[in-house]
Image (cartoon, rainbow, N blue to C red; front, side, top):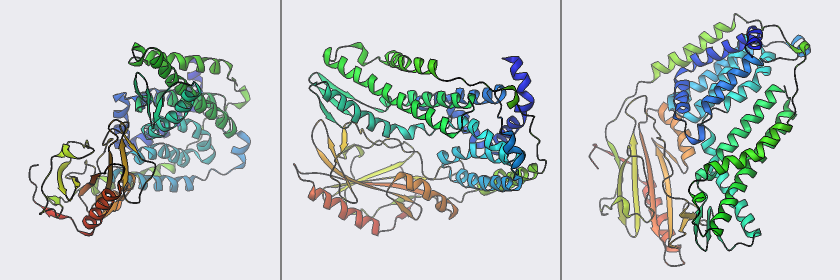
Length: 481
């Protein structure tokens, strides 16, 4: 292995150089990403290992572009330089707004842009599969968890019904005569999903697959990961039913899950094809376009340097207030659906005409702060299920234990902009920051339904929402909660 690495090092060096330069250019975001790798959380426990695998692949199996295509096609160095500048501008805007998820996606794009500017188009294309492997270390996996939980709940529920097992299936909750099992985020199978895709990507790189080979490998990996998780959850449901919810496996099933995964993945890996490169496919080290360093220097000026100059903030002290002078304040935990908000948010609650109103807000005081902070799950969605019948502007939730129904509406205020979803609020902070905004608020309205009737609660919430949105937020001096 060491001898092979030494032989391939001259070919791999230009690609390693491009990666190192990209890390230096986008250093603030890379440092945050490395910090997330070192946290070893469930959704990114493989992050550091993936980065090391990327480096190992580049050194031991460096990119080998098609020789015939390399001679026929122009390198388009100038186009690569322009692409790098555009990527850097986009990254600087995202970094200024601290939209971390999108800023992380700019990192592999930056590696590709520098490779293109220094080594040319064809060399960059041959490096793209390796960059895709590196991209698997980005923290986007958590966004896939809700979809995986929803899919697992639907499939496992169907399988349980096929087994003629008495069970009540509500969303991600499976109730058997002896207790209730909840398919939560930890049961999404995200680890099997991520590792399977990583193994498929490694196999595709080592076999020098084209896009059809990549598509086949990823399809097999995704299908395998999903089936493994569904089988694992079904086993837990059967064990829970047969043991009357007394089996230790229900609380400690980590090892069992990996044994099931191994029973599926080991045969697939054993029979997966292995294609070795012929000696004729080895290429000479790529020539570096010295003018590409000019593009990198320009990118440094419009990226890190400009970002440093633009991170001064003008803070307008104080908090927002709603016009609720005639409404009594309420305890935060008195809401029909108690909400869990980050401690950094200032929270105030009122109750008026049967409607609870919660104002949670945040002020950006330094360049390192986010205008729109990270908001985790606000309530237990395995206990409060969204009803299938929906009304515009509000959502009906039902408690699967008490059967209570609650109408809830929310909106996000980002400076002078308003959004109905958290994702849109994150995007709106870009123009809000460019306008100098420093305030963010989340307004929540709730009303309890009458028995089997949510019409009056819905009308109360919608009327109150319309009234509040017609007002402008009033800035008051900061006070303790």
